Image 1 (cartoon, one colour):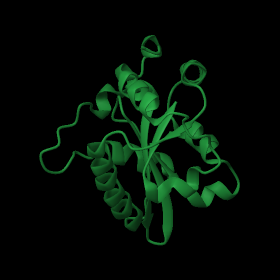
Image 2 (tube, one colour):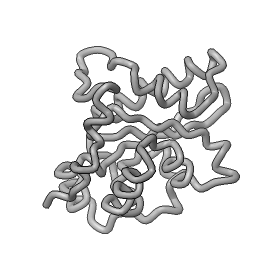
Image 3 (spheres, one colour):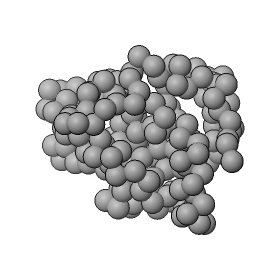
Amino acid sequence: MYLNVTQKSRDLFRDYPVVRSIDVAQRAARANPIFSWHATAITARRQRFVLISHDASALCVVLNTADCATQRLADLFWAQYGLAAADLTTYRHVAGDWQINQLLDHQRVRRLNEQGMYVDFLWQQAITSPLELALLVAQTPPLGRQQPRHQVATIARDLTPTRFRWHP
């Protein structure tokens, strides 16, 4: 599974392996968007969050790094992923472990930054549950001329186990 990580969040992912070849990883991530994610870190009201946005659906996982003191970031991520247990097992088996990659799509980063502003707004409104934050953030429409390729209503369809196959 590829995590395309922004520079400002690299320190949070230093314990995970980096791809061997950036060009090969980027081609594979484009061919297999269901196994590709973009990640960034934001600070909202003195709390640091990691936003991990799925490339093939509207799914966005919001993690509070304060919880990383007791759990690894990957463990927090899989706990928040939101698939049924059997589907999650299948996804993890096919996707493999995290591999840290350079950014793939700057439009995804722009979207992550918009979602980060929304996390800050929600945190100010005393919404602190990571799952609730993730659900609300995933529903935010893009600003400007960006068109969402996927919607929250299609997450279940976008992430059906029949799509969990690597493409060359």
